[in-house]
Image (tube, rainbow, N blue to C red):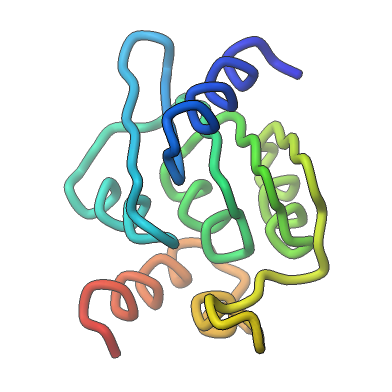
Length: 139
């Protein structure tokens, strides 16, 4: 495991965060659920190119957002197979604790709605727009 990812994984777990991003000089943390913090950081113009991330749950939706951010590495406590494919396709170093076929919704009775929203999309920029609309406008 890459040293920065190891540190971020510890911060994620000990701080009770949902995601942590850092480039060693600057660290961003969030306790917001789902992809909301990723969408907000992108929409607020945070410069995250070259950062590393630790996240509780990464599916295809989150992976697309990480690609748009330009992160170089991601550690996921739980990673969906489609998320892994997306991260690998764009050369993002990826580590995970658990690999799962898909991300389930919060009720635990179906596929996550964000994953469903981007299931047929392959372009991360297009996925970002769909996810932004879903998260910020509650469509």
